[in-house]
Amino acid sequence: MDEKMESLRIEILRSLPSVEELFQKVSAQKGGDLPGRAILEAVREVLNEARNAVMGSLEEELENFPRSRVEWLQRLSSQLSKDIYWGPRPLINATGVIVHTNLGRSLLAPQALKALVKVASHYCDLEFDIREGKRGSRQSHIEGLLRRLTGAEAAAVVNNNAAAVLLSLSALARGKEVVVSRGELVEIGGSFRMPEVMAQSGAQLVEVGTTNKTRPSDYERAISDRTALILKVHTSNYRIVGFTQEVSLEELVRIGRKASIPVMYDLGSGCLVDLKSYVDDREPTVQEALGKGVDIVTFSGDKLLGGPQAGIILGRKELVELIKAHPLARAVRIDKLTLAAMVGTLELYWDPQKAMSSIPTLRMILANSKELKSKAKALARSILKEAPWIQASVREDCSRVGGGAMPLAKLPTWVVALKTIGMGANELANYLRRWDPPIVARISQDEVILDVRTMEREEIPTVVRALSASRSR
Ligand SMILES: *Cc1c(COP(=O)(O)O)cnc(C)c1O
Image 1 (cartoon, rainbow, N blue to C red):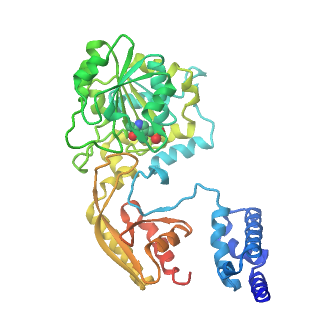
Image 2: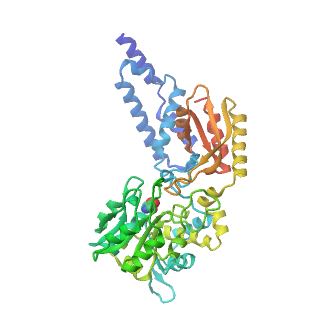
Image 3: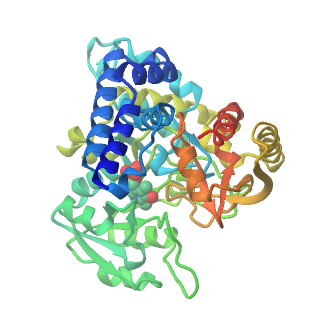
């Protein structure tokens, strides 16, 4: 028995490819974009691991190893694609979730990308006043643009919206009280919890109302001479429905004015164009919030705005000046590449139609049903041709905006649902995820769903190639 096991072990070890063989296969697959040394090191490591795994395994586990060179090469080279690329790696988003936080949120418009590339390899006037020949402010490049586009008195841009909220609270309410409704004590993306951010800023949270109902009188009663701010938080990733009441922005502003206390609104997404005629769940626009007299608004640059990761602070000049002058501002400042991409994105908003057609996030939200159906049909047709053993049905479904924006919005879309004998939905989804480039789909009722809303037409051939190779896997 032992002897038989040992001879099996030897057979498996003998079928392992050489460093050279695996190196050749991987290099041929990955093309010339990686240095040979990176591939070689990874190849050596993966072969060592495989050898050790075979040596250290029990009899029954030996059955799981390949016994031919071809099989080994297949298995090890797919394992290697993970080790060779250090990421972030581009992938195909077939989930239909547009602002997908795990997949990098918004894609940049070509104009934003161009602006970024230009400053990346040239010196620039980041903090230099060209006319005066002396030190300038990086905020000056964007402040005027934001003021004109939104009607705000003043503006500042930082690393992300979490930083914008933390910085604003630190500058405006440290050591003082901030009044917030219990219905708005949100957690966003697992690590951003309003009560904890508040604690970090040194402000003291005063909760008012209940989870489902907060009335004007709740705020009025909570205001004291220690109150520095009234804070409203957009409940980005959920809605409280049913027996509910929240205090409107107008009402909050009225309460704030009466007590001479500024009102801050963490908008979260920060949409600059009104999507109400296209989407069934509405976000207040930035201009609307400012128009109602809110003193400070904060929002993300890479959610509905469709730019790079950033946090934007708009509002009354004297408050924004306090925020800019706070020591934390230096720690959360925006870098030059992001700044350039942000300006490149914002400039598109001079013409809202242009913004909606060239900013990928908005374009995907507004994609029309006819166009989506035709894309889904094209995908299904190619699958039928190249991978006829896979059942690909075109049908209607719903996409999501994602990124904690418009949580209730269902965007009617067209998807291709995949089913195949011999491979379960999980297995097929895993296989697609390990393709190069990875293809990320969603699974629903034992089918793999490809939502074409977040896919470009140019990506269809890649998906079809992956599926057609799934048989020889
Ligand atoms: C997303 C969000 C944040 C955090 O913004 P980041 O840009 O991810 O830092 C804060 N507040 C609200 C209401 C949000 O929706």
